[in-house]
Image (cartoon, rainbow, N blue to C red; front, side, top):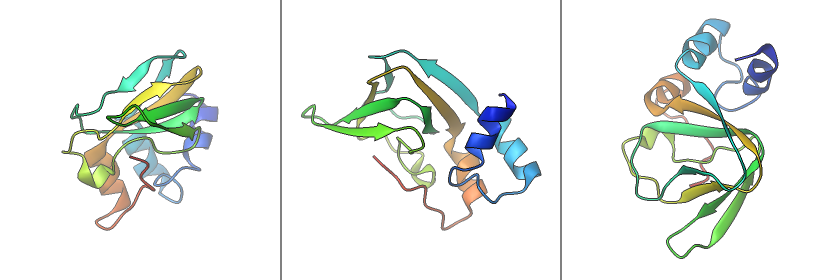
Length: 122
């Protein structure tokens, strides 16, 4: 992860305002993945414990009827990290080349504290 990525991530909830030590600890468990246009990031009904932030690009979040909600860079595109044991309610498909920060939900839940909210999109 380069310095520019780290500065961008510091502007996102819940990373803004945390200590450098806590930020480094959380980002040590995170990864940045690049997706080309038309790639699926996650699928409805799949279960994982990850939280996804768009660093660049855009996605469509598709429900069971294939109705789409669009999300752009800087937005959370998954369930709340405090609800990390639940399956995805939507499918995320890139609508342009996209870079995504992926971090374990339990790590983010700890970073946010007990009553945190990640401005959930799903």
